[in-house]
Image (cartoon, rainbow, N blue to C red; front, side, top):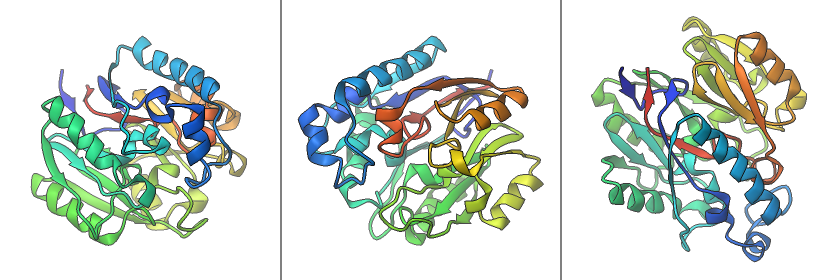
Length: 292
């Protein structure tokens, strides 16, 4: 059995998470931060902890090794969306540089924990480059897609290429639209979730034509998220194995399309931990090793 860090859909073996209790900390903390971080409304602390417990329980029930990012006074409640601060590769972790000022300390918090766990570091993105993990998706073991967004700039992408291309990895850049502007959380993985080697959930109205054609050329069947399920994160789907997925509850059309494509889907209640902060199951996890 082989293992890789270069996949979004193979059997998930290990993952880092930032449990709600470690990110939200308290009702007071949530109340102080949610508005400046552009949340839809203030998450309910107790309900959020209950939602996260069930989310984490699902990972554990599928024999995923779960490691936790601890409480860190230098980061804010957005740190629950731990995919964004680092990128996993077969050659070590890439530590990001956040495009959202309020999240600037999160990469350093990841770096400290990886060092404690003796996880190798491939490189660190530095200013003026910005790069966020939500803009990164593996299309196959040798191809990495990166979104050029308000959170990930060309300098950050250039630094990423300098780190990974000498290792034999091709980097494909998807030029994403303005959409709602700089203050909105809009990543590549807002419109793309690979769930098997030839199946991906997409929101085509915001997808660049060139990038969408690249997916089709690679043999991907595209599950199209309807307009009414985009804002409720119908496109944010985490594969824990090929065609075995977890998504936010409240996206019945997308869920049905996945099931018709042969996927096993578990939907979790994510009003407090996902909907209000704009981060679905891919955002809540920093996947590491996958097996095949």
